[in-house]
Length: 269
Image 1 (cartoon, rainbow, N blue to C red):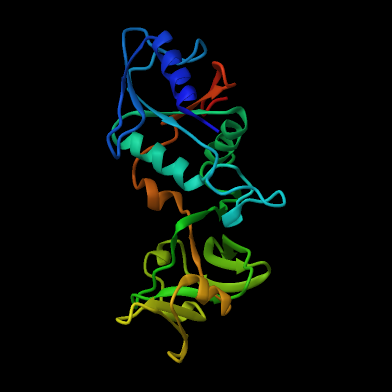
Image 2: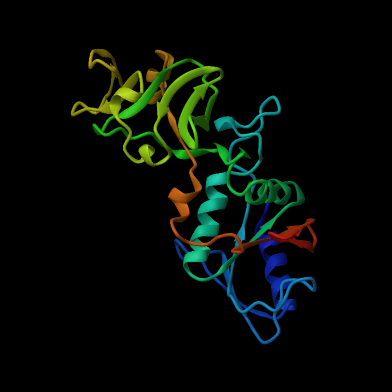
């Protein structure tokens, strides 16, 4: 995983490329910020860069691989939400985000960032999304739930009619919910999902059917899952994270082999 040593390698590298570096330990700030001096450039193949760099160590995701698959349904050793939020945060400060990562993590991050950008896949403009850290918040204030013990969620846009798409959540091949679009996800109607839950005044989780019938009351998410009710994770919709910020050219990845930076990946590599 990326370490403080890899951050030091990244700092040393950008200094050698003509940047002045300031380290930071403040909450909400990147690990370091590099200010370009005259003629600074990240690599010989890139033009001089007049934007500061937000240098960020990018670690392998906190979850471990089990059976070749990562938790949260990801088949990547990086967290797409972390990648997108850091790039968007840097872009809002008019900085380029420079990740420092091991070769394996760098390759996975490059996939998230480019193939296609920030979505699992796209076909004819219809996207399949990564999962986010968020859950689906319904227009009633409750959260969406699904009845399953080991769900395999997938969110994707599905063509409907001429030029229209719906946002559909699947568990394997079963349809969990259909929404009119990704915009509906901001406050989806409660009747779009078969189950919902909320934390009530007694501080316990109350699970209800779509008709309002109370199905169970649980002291914890673990107990709720043991009863077969699972919180539905929201998809990672790029435009909901970045807003109108242009992130196409707002990142680069410094690949650290454990001793030094060996190459820099960019949107054009």
